Image 1 (tube, one colour):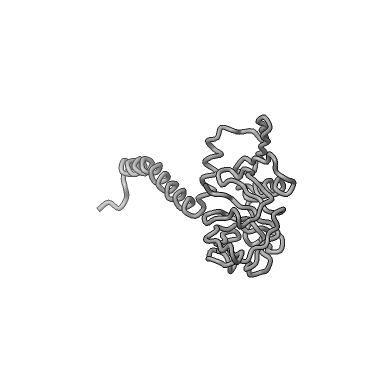
Image 2 (cartoon, one colour; image 1 turned 45 degrees about the vertical axis):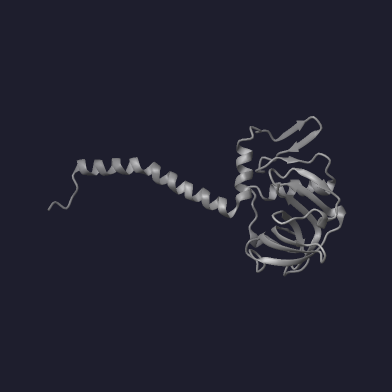
Length: 206
């Protein structure tokens, strides 16, 4: 038996490989996108909204509505009517969570960095929330339901939309607005993150 492939057989094998290569690539990308969507659905939705919005400018002034878009931000920001506190928060978080400047959880410091969590349930009477903190993602309290006491003054409490992080309102009592399925940006007040506060920004899911 001839142990070597003929030139024609090698050619046929190469053609078959080239024909099937794009299909393998598309299937791999499909699995990757589905997996990313399951892990970080908000990021995928925000990125898709940004890609198909038709807005490709850094800053847009639309009448009295001020919108700020940073080149490094995956979404536009409506800061119309926002205080200095909320304007600063929106710009800082947009830059921090952009693909080009995404921070590693290893650099996260509970004394100075905000966490981001899903609101699982609300206990208004005791001013407690059950949260599932997914940023940072490598701490002992990350990725599990956690009962936390909340202390946020209305003056340091705000609300933004889940669609593109537009400013909605501020200066309100958190427990009058918070609901399960919302997201919460806030600060841990101890290393275990069983007490949170200082600032509270809700991402309202509609």
